[in-house]
Amino acid sequence: MEFLKSLSELFSQTISIQPSSVEFVEAALTSTTGPCALSYYDPDQICLIRRHMISLLQDYPSFKPSMEAFIHNNGSTVNLLTANGELHVSSSVPAVPLKVLVHENYPQMAPIVYVVLNSTCPVYQNHPFVDSGSGATTCSYLENWLYPGCNLSGLVRNLVKLFSHYHPFCYSPSSGLAHPNLFSKREAMDRLVCSLYYDVMNFSSTAEKEIAELSDIQVEMAKRAEMVTSMAIEHERERISLRRLVKNMTDEADKLLNWLKVHDERRFAAVIGDDAIVDAFEGVDERSKRVIDCLAGEMAMEDSIDALDKALELGVVPSGQYIKQVRSLARDQFVYRAKLQKLGSLSELNNYHYTKDYNL
Image (cartoon, rainbow, N blue to C red; front, side):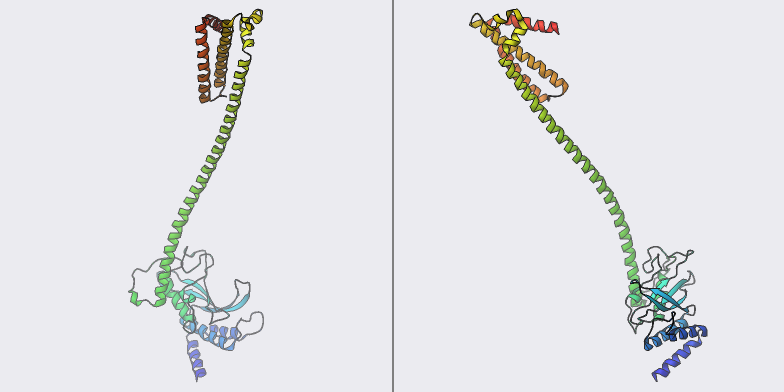
């Protein structure tokens, strides 16, 4: 009885569609050999596919059956029964060219749906259900596919409702909103998915823009950090070099001071002349010896201060070290002058400075 009932249903369906379409479906499903044979092998599956395909062609006469080779993501190729046609969702928007491929594991697996792309009507960018590059279509009906509650006609019917709200070619929301109680569960899920999709897209666009700005700031900060690090390294090298130079100059100044203390007689002999060298080194009394020592010491301090002045002008001695050394030398020079004044021999020192300034 069930077999006769199914034959009666198929007979009533074939009345409203073109015989050529039914004949094509019959011939395609019964051909099991050859390169164009479809990838359906179970008799019960073939009978079910025939009934669902004819039902789809009856409900939507604009669709025509065909066969098409399909390549899965894993590289396997199958021949599938396909329904191609234009889906009229509304009189105010263009029809949607659609391709529905019946999976080789139908009805356990959902059909594969594509919106046929064309250059005159490109797919709306960032459409929540249709990929703008390939036309691959997905929706909650396909994602929650479960036989026997789902079939080809129900799928196309759901796509009509879906595209009436979110047309793939020109997104234009409906002018009026129906009451939420009038929505089916799938329609409500599709609306919710679409709203969430656009919210995520807006958030992603804003987040990407902020990330790009922060990346630019990060690059600029990295450049500045590298510059500051380079400057700090250069300053550290310069500081070490200057410290080494100051140490060397200080050592040289100390050597000079020590040398002057040891060779005061020679410096003094060069000032008063070669004829009196012997007399200069050999004071006739204690007072003469003290005068010679004081004159030599004062002249040594003066020469040292002159040498430090030249070093400061050349920039080889820092100002702090210069002031410290000059202060120490000036203190010693003052002590020598005070001793000379006490000994009554300050005039010899003045004669020396006069001769020195005259030669300069």
